[in-house]
Image (cartoon, rainbow, N blue to C red; front, side, top):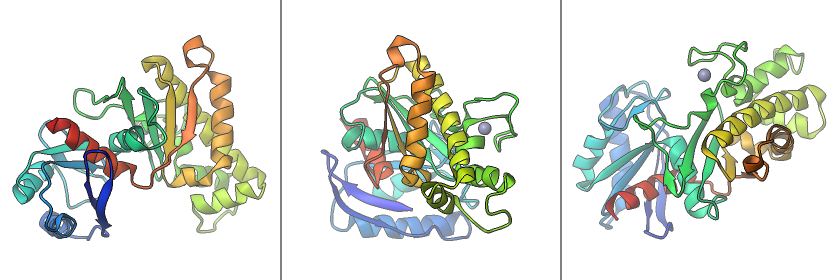
Length: 287
Ligand SMILES: [Zn+2]
């Protein structure tokens, strides 16, 4: 869990983070409250923006992040409003990532962009004509669950052949291992990336499969909402060229309609885009 004081121009004044404690709903919130008080110090913020892993209910301010079992339909907006005493906004972490990169990062010259976080899952957010695209429940832009192969592998979401089943770190590792790469070893996407950078063909093939699925999801989104820019971040994107080279090659291959042929796919520039995007939502809500 991370918190920051962010000025109206997107400057981070203070920031800190803590490991999310195991435990029940109140225990987790108590740790968050300590973090918020520490970052706030003597300052008097006028709004709070929250970015959270989904699923969430933005209408009622409830969150149920998959990786925090203690919080199920947890009324985080109400609890933080009570704690800080100012208006509170809530957005999906992928939306906040996209907004942060749009505000001060790799997407700052674009007004219509898709942000993608490639990590243990694949999340995202869309900024359309300078505004976040939320959807009716606040869950728009689940790029990881765009189906790119309806006959593909089962996805954790219950569907088949989603982008995430090819492009998440754990799925790329599993595919490479099924094909004989470091079979049986306890490895992760960072090891896969290092081997791919050294020219290992099985590792490169896993990145190429993931890149192809990402490109298919990117093009599906681009032809639907008419994008100019795609910003890719998240732990797996740290792999660099072994991910970006094939993503860009596949995007070029699949982008054929005239309005998507100039689509720009670039790496994220910020380490804290999520915090900045959450802050951007808060500033936008009071201006
Ligand atoms: Zn899925």
